Length: 199
Image 1 (cartoon, helix red, strand yellow):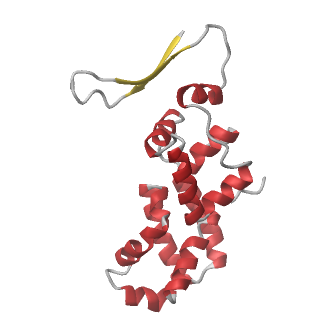
Image 2: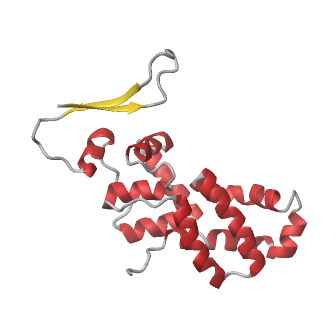
Image 3: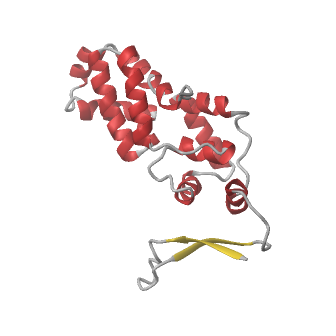
């Protein structure tokens, strides 16, 4: 049996081509294969940069450790493009890259960014004041629309400028000193990735 992974966007060099082959692999027939084994055949095994699900959640929950993890993954051949391909294969294009890693490493079902944001909002209401909640709701709307890159520490100032119409002084008046704003921005992110209690 030969399997192909097709990109439905077609071939940019030949507009008549409806599909573009991105990958293919040959398998023995009648050999059962899990989704995880299939992903490993297509992309290789994810490096062991985290020992368990809890460590992955911890690393992914803070902008600085997430950035370092993504850099290490890129150096090992799992950069943004490859993770995006994996995201498409597991039908998780509206999910966070965390969900791609957690699905690949631990077979966890992916959540959409919208589901993550909704869960985080419930917790945010009990940990942040009203003005902080309004700003974090703005940040979450960008996260849902664009992706995890909106949670990078480098995005804080541009997000403040957008939310406060280019007035950092208004942002400071509402949210506190710059170091406090940074703590709020980095600190709320753990609520996006914390494990939900069993119902």
